Length: 314
Image 1 (tube, rainbow, N blue to C red):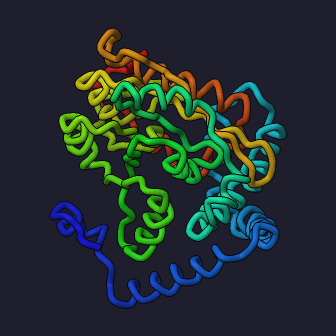
Image 2: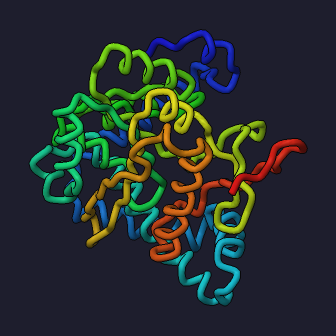
């Protein structure tokens, strides 16, 4: 995989010959695992859940700390119950993400459906692009399959995998199987504007709850703690006046989801720029409080402290 100058200069992307060999072997094993039926994959998930939670205690301190800040009104017992349900969903998500590498579209149609496609079709008829702000809640990986159901070109913004080219290739194959394009986050603004000027209807999709650098200029309260956010989405929205949609994935059963899409801000140029991300944050909080076990609590989302001189929005 060809890397640009930024990735070649960043030592975090370096991969030694031994590490490269091991990573290739592991990626090959994942490809074989992806061929297994769901009934076997969920047995693997059950075993992995036990090992992850009770043997390795994977990021247990991070999970419990995040839950403590997010839900101070709940008892320690209630937070432990949420954590237990989180680990069960988390390992399901792991095997579901692996399965995406080989699952047929006919099979995937039985596991995830999409709502809001009629609105997207109307936007396409008008030649309009828009932005989708997603979150790490339920199964966001399978949402790349929306490309098989719409006419817009889906541009999926992602953070390149550092020091593991085989895993990045594995993930990109799974996400781009349906015709969408994965765009590294540092190229997102340029690529979005290129398609905009070319008048090609696109959906710029990103999980905007990821953690940017501490130097981010946008900080807000998120689940009772100060957190930085990428300001790129609202800047692109303001510059192009592309509507901002929200992606809400609902779990309807084990390995079964409904992905819902609805406008969050229809005319970005008519609102203050910070209102876009604030609306996104409040909608995320609403959903997380309703179904806390499906959020990615193992993520170190609040690892930075707000630098002096940067205001807290909201």
